[in-house]
Image (cartoon, rainbow, N blue to C red):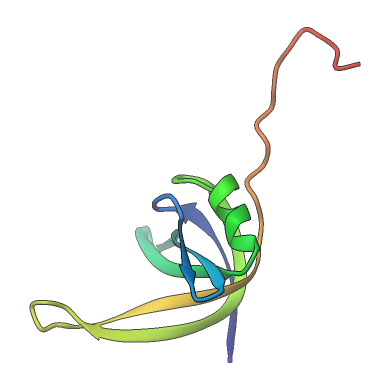
Length: 110
């Protein structure tokens, strides 16, 4: 089992689907890393199952920063052009919501 934690930004809004009796939110997290001055971007295809999928759909959107932790596995596939590819998928156990935006106001809340 490969357990990972990653911090990145959502590439698009999450998509929620119902499979049988279970809901799943699928989204892609882009993680940047600089190696010897070159920037590399990793794409993590993430899935959150169950009731938390609705939390993901409500509070995360394209560009949101998120930290995900979960079980990772590599999926191999062929493109339409016949090229072999691989992608890293994460079944998310834990995630963080983006920080609340600061509200500037002259009025005191109490």
